[in-house]
Length: 263
Image 1 (cartoon, rainbow, N blue to C red):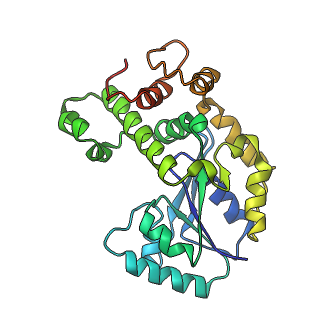
Image 2: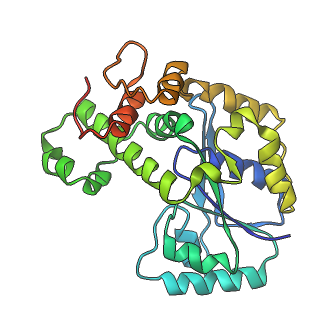
């Protein structure tokens, strides 16, 4: 039995899995607590668990760690010593941190492939219905014109930024080769269940809650046209009739083009 550092990009379905783990593993330490479930949006919300003993591990819930990496490592050493079972949620992708943890506890990614990327982006942006203007700092061109954009244009810019970041993480962290992937939540539940059960954690995806979650998230799945074009490397980002705006921006990136407003 061992602890788990569970990492994923926003929109990957990790909060829903953490919610289900909380229900079945009451003896497990986590850096999150249950918040609420929005069935209509197909969205599960968690909140950070405050901790005096592990404040930086608490911060991993929704923040990156920059200046305190050594202290974060020390906290994990204590956590591993004091808790046989723990699940730590994070979106922190950092090579240095990964290398350190490799000898103590490998990080478990919830991965995805390019075939499933539209789901990740749509679930991230459309469920939130919030424009994350702070993310514009990652693109100098968009940062310079941000103040001139209306909300519709900002949303397109966010799709571009999130898609670009997701492809970068996919490649740098080999997310397509993860132990299980976000698409397995729809197409291979056994693979997900076996991952956790092999590590000593109970989880059952054959529930009405999870079935409802899947049904409410079907609308974010990639189109057949997107999958066909991707397979043929036909990055037709101007196809407004058969591709949605997220799929078109992904193809704009894959075609090697610069950002532009597509509608």
